[in-house]
Image (cartoon, rainbow, N blue to C red; front, side):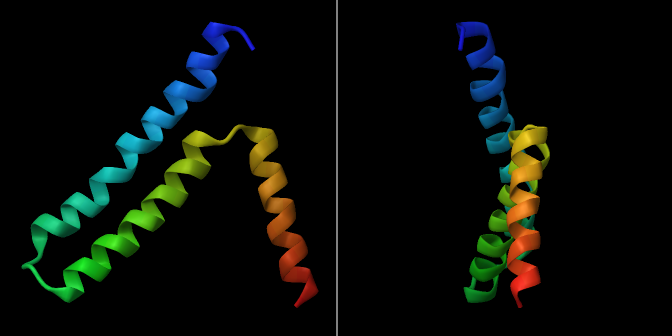
Length: 78
């Protein structure tokens, strides 16, 4: 893996995932008063944002296909 590929395939993707992940929890945090419900909503929205951004931006086509095959296998076993 050369330096240019590393920067675009790893560092850039990870940076974009990090940036995209923070917007929704920050919006939830600013729109609500302090309390336990806000804490739970911020944590849940952060997790959902992270999963969505990691899937949409952080994974390439092969990684997405692999993940979907694992999920399909788990769902078929039930």
